[in-house]
Structures are given as C-alpha cells and as structure tokens.
Length: 409
Image (cartoon, rainbow, N blue to C red; front, side):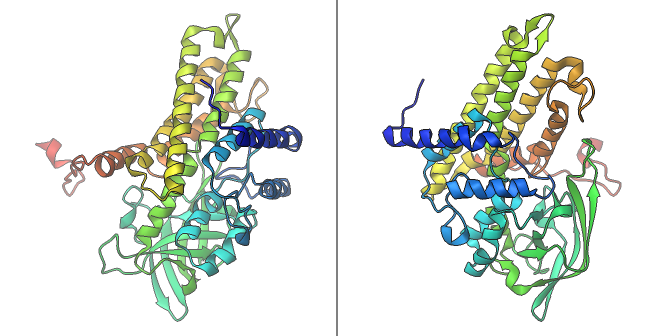
C-alpha cells in the first residue's frame, strides 16, 4: 500500500529529504535523549539549526523561540519518516522540551512562558522531574514532600527518588503538598524549582547499565518563589496530569521504534547463523515482520492522537495505551537483536569482540521505560479502570507483619 498526500506534501517531503541528505549528513545518527549528560556545544548548535529550519520546536510560537508553524500531522509524519530513513539525528528530547514546555503552553502563565520556553527548547536550561517519592511512586497522589509559604517563598522539605538527570539539571518541576488537610488529590501544588538553591542534595543512583541515570533528591528548607507555581495552589494534580500526558507521548515516540526497527533489520542482514543471514531464517524474519507491524500500528495510532490534540478532542482510552505498547515494543526489538547476536549480544562498552552498537546496554535500558513513568502493571490498571470502565483492582489487606490476610485464610 502506498499513501499519497498530494503535490503540496510531495514538495515538502523533497524539502525535508534535501535537508537530510545535505545538512543532516553531517550529524551522528543518535540524538541526546532523556537521562544523558548536559548537551554539548555540538548538540546545542544542531538544535538551533533544526529550530531554524522547522524540524524541532516546529509548532511552538515564534514569540517563545519556536519555528511557529501551524500544526500539520502529515508534515510531522513526513519529517519523522525522512529523518529515520536517512539516519539524521533528531533534536534534543528531554523532560524540559517534551514535557514541561507543552505544559506551560497549556496551563502556564505568560510570564512563565516568556521566561522558560525559549531557553529550554534551545537547550540552555535542562530540567528534571520531581514526582516519585519513596512509597509514592505508583500512588503518586500520596506524596509527602511539603511546602509552606513564608513571605514571598514556598519553603520545601522532603525527598524525591528516581529523578532522571537531576545531577545535570538547572531546574526541576516538582510536586509538593501545600494543603495538608485537603484530600490527597486536591492538596498538591506544581512548582518550578531552581536546582542551585541551598538545601538541595542530589545523590546519584547506579543502575544495572553501570550508569547513574536516576537520583535521589533530599530537600531541606528549599526556597522557591511563590511566582513559580504553575496553576493554582492545591490544583497541582491537574497540572501534573497534563505533564503526564506529554510524558507518555515522549516515551512512546514512534520515531524511536522506527529507528530501532531499521537498526534491527540492518543487523539481521549482516549477522549470519551457521552461514545463513539471520534475515533469511524464517523464525527470525517472522519475528521482525511482526515487530514492523506493531511499529506501524503505533505510528499511525500516534497520528490519530495528534489529530485529536490538534482538534482539542479527548483521546480517551486510546491515549492511555501508547506508553504500554511502545515500551514493550522497544523491549521486543532489543530482545530479537540479542537473540540474533547470540553470545556476542552479551558484550557492551566497546568490548574487543563487539561488532555492533551496544544492543545489550540498550536492552537493559528498555526496563527503565517499562517501569518508569508508571509501571506496566499500573498502566494496565489505568487502561482497564479509567479507559474501559472495569471494576477497580481489589485492595490487598495486610496484617501488622505485612502478610496478606486473604492468603492466610
């Protein structure tokens, strides 16, 4: 099947392809993504080039530093396709650009947009997300980090955990409890916290990849200006869910899965098993075709959701499925790559016998996507309960020793 969008879009595709084949060839394939170090000057320069040509921050208004184009789902599709086809590096993807900026555009004040959006999309301000706490991950609304107002500042005390990029960040969008007597979903506020304030301690957490993507944050009498609240006091749960909507979209980026499929296909064309190319073996080829089908399904589902967003329509249950589907797809893509590589798939960190990129390291990283941003198990509950209207999962009753009372019977 070949889809034709008309001569207008053919011209646009030719324009994007020319950019990728000329300017884009000077870039490396991989972009800087969530959890990595601060952007290098090379990355910052490339981000500025992409914004100038409309391939990053495309629909962000010019007054905030963006390209200022009208939303067009076909143009977005073409840009993604041509960047993946040519291996051109995309723009910076991180919590600030992909999550906070659209949140500020939707519910922030004009002063906040003017102050933060331009610097964020150009990579000058790096953000982290202060949501999860010990004991308040899946049940985020039970968070205990508190803030009280003294004069012109919120005074924040508490602890956050699994805070990606905190050791590199300039700012943090953080959830705190400001109304301790209100129901838990109504007593939360959403604040913008400078990371250089006194009282902030960042402790990196080492993962099984050997790197510290995540961190613990310890907050002791941290001062945040009262003007740094997004939305109204006590209504941070609504703002938090706006951000979570964009977080799911970032994690489920269809361009990432398309790039992974391309790399997997190239690997299978090169690797041989008993003298036969992996792609010529039916069992492996069949798995690849199924993954390609899932990738296309995610891609066009994403376009439907983008259309809903442009038309200001509710995404309903469809919007709840993208994160779950995309993270499992990424896991399965990397699982097939390791099966094709066999014992060589266990190598990473540029081992002497390593013949391809770090498929093993990326495979281990897929677990972070499945767990982070709401675990797969919690996502299934959200889909079933909020999306499909099924009964809530029964609560487990524990005795004083933590034993399941139902199982004891």
